[in-house]
Image (cartoon, rainbow, N blue to C red; front, side, top):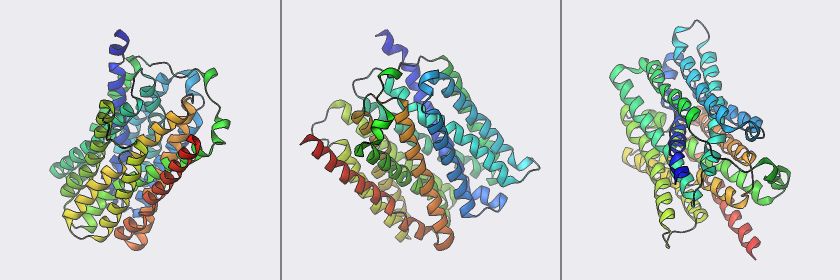
Length: 400
């Protein structure tokens, strides 16, 4: 009992770390219109900030994935949160420093990427290592905090800018940096459960020779792209394509997407924990959700009705809710003796998708508008559907 109680602070730190990760990933996108106005940036330049953020996360995950088990998670978890704090401070200082503004923003984004890489790499295995009877439920609930963090960040940031003016965006960045600073202290104190010993871990070489593992990596790539392409551009879409005030677009559009995604993850986690008999398997729910996401992208591109746009945000949030945490859970079940290297590869795959999706939509938007961007990007959740159909085929073949 004492061990269970002792890990409560660790669980809370993981939840807050996931909210910090949501801040790192989404705050720049919420500020897209303010940054574009202040520094005269194009859609492609804004999308490049997202791309660099995620590319850096991928590099950090791949470089450190094979060594964090050796040196212990704590120093990297604390370091990641400190990097996020410094990156936010740097980003906020951009308007007052006599340097090229876009270069300054890019340097701050690189710091975000380092922080996000460590958090993406370590939060899931840290939670997974805590003694628990239901890993997939815990994973889904933790990832729900990413969604709730995204919604809270969108609403609070938008209200702040509505009250104090769009030019006040550096100050909201300074407020948000208190969160990773606080969590760095929590991770410095909380207990970290032991992971699979390095000598007992399965081999990376053996895993990458397995078609199922390659498929899971591709699947999480589509998961990241499906989720982030939609969410990163929702704020700009509601303001520019729908003609809505930013406060409405962010609070109703971005928040609706994020809350719906969080609801989907929490609902699955709770129902799975209760052992509800009628609940379809996680992979089948992911397949149905991917199909719903395709429909949502098309509605977003075609409608001029704000209500239908908000409805598309809700449907897509629910649709993509299980794709990322679900793929992680399927990977843990398929390769239970994998070490942190597996989470590193999966994080890299997800972040590659999460970088390419928004960047591709931005490039398309520069040439054909945001509506065309959403319409053509519907091929991304279609890729997830194809992967899940192949996954079911491989599982049936393995059973037979």
